[in-house]
Each structure stands twice: as structure tokens, then as C-alpha cells.
Length: 342
Image (cartoon, rainbow, N blue to C red; front, top):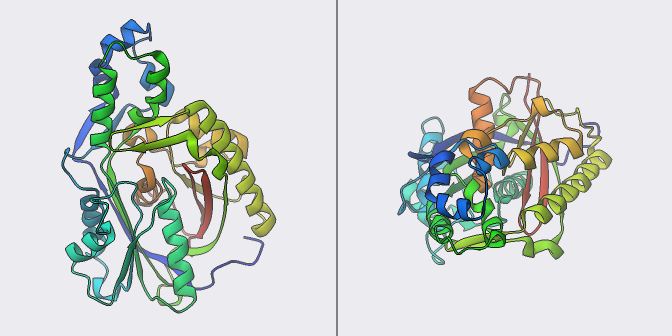
């Protein structure tokens, strides 16, 4: 980072992930909608060839979104004192109920005390990065010491509803492709603790972030647990354009170049989206951590999940600059720089 960092004393001090206990192969998914695909004369293997997704994890149908976040958080607390937490964000797209907040359910399940401020923070697939940003701002201002940012997504109900809809051979090809993005979804959970860097000198430092929005395109992807309809082609164009502009903001503010980051951790929908993102921003393909083939689109869980996976596999090393990047329905885009101390 050649420009002045936004944050001087904030770090990622602990993190963990959880993954759905079941696994759905893309071949099995296609078999469930084979009559429709045959009627529409769509070739076998279309879903895997268009998305690059071989399989995706799923939780059981009645598994609340909070449970993935809770499980990941309990893994975090195996090595971090939960009593130090004073702020909790739940950043999931899915929620257990409209009220109370899913954050309050997570707080109670984790045994966090009454001095913890907890709330839901929603921004589609971008929610987790936004949670990290707001936690960092609170910590830098001296208003919080340690924040727990969580996400848990159970995509199975939405996926099953989509497969039920597409099992009707009378569905049009337009409806098929409006529901196509729903076939990419996977399930999992993630949790990260953000805290003061001076107390954790070896922890990854959060240096800065840029974000932009394109709210006029909020109609390109809309959904609930009954289903999700997406104009995938228009969303790809608008999303990548927004990402290009966002990266340009990072270049102006922090001096970013396409090769600034040693490792790039980004929210992923499919291979096509990820490749286009890489090509337009001129980001080296080999530096992107790729989770879509076996995890699919995990929503806001994707970025922290991929970070933990890359850390575990030794892809992130001391001295590395790591980019956390995401595009969310709305549209919104955020990119965060994390520095790994030597």
C-alpha cells in the first residue's frame, strides 16, 4: 500500500469455517431436472460446463443459518477467549426469523454476555466484508475492543424449491435461465475476530478498503427462500464494471496495481464470473483462490471461507498482501487490503 492506510491498529486475530454436512454433485442436480433439459434441448453437462462447479456442500433442510455461524464461531473460541468479545455482527443473507435478529440467536448460543452489542448486517454477498469494515472502524475509534463477524448460509431450501420449479417440463427456457444462478449455491459458515493489532503483532493487518455502489441495478438479482431470479448476463456485465471502477478507486487512494496482491480472495459465483473478473481487472488468474469447483457460491460466507482455506493450505504467507474482494446484489462492491506481517 503506497497511500496512507485507513486503519493503523486493526487486525484479523482469529478465524474459522464450517461446511455443509451433505454434498450435491452437479451431475445429480442435472438428473433431477433432466426432463426439462431434454424438452428445452439443453445438452447434458450444461450446468457444470457453464459454472465450473462440480459439487457443492449443503446443510440439512431445516438447518437454520445461525447454526453455520455458531459452529464456525465455536471453532474460533477453541483458541480465543470469547469473554473478550464486545461486538457481534451476523452478515448472512439468510436469517432464522424476520425477528429477532439472527445475531441475538448467535449471541445466546455462544454464551456471550449482556455487554455485547449484536446486530444483523445485510448487504447480499458483500455483507461479511462490510462487517469487517464496520468492526475495524469501531476498534480504531476506541468504541470496541474485539468484534466477532459471522455468516451462515443454508442454501438447500432455496435450491430444493428451484429444482421443484424446474422439474415442471412446461417451464420456458427464459424461466430456466432466470433461475440458473440458484443452481450454483452452496452452504457453509464462517467467523472472524477483529481486534487491536498492537496486541497481536503477528496477526494479519487490515490496512484499507474502497467501495462503490450501483443501486440502479438492484433489480438484476432478487430472491428469498422461495426462489431467486437473476438476469445473469446483465448482472455479470454490471458487476464486473462496478468492480473495475472500485479497483480504480483503490489505485487512486492506495496505489493498487493488478499485481499488488500476492493472494486474491474473492466472492465467487462460477468460473465464468471469476475469469471475467480476473480478466477485466487484469488480476493474475493464478493468484486467485478458487473455491467454486467444490463449494459453489456460498454468498457472504465465501470470502472468509476462502481466506481460511487458503491459510490452511499455506497459500497465504508472511509478507503477503491479500485482497478480499466481493460484489453483491444491489449492486455493491468492496475491496479490502490485508497485510500479513513478516
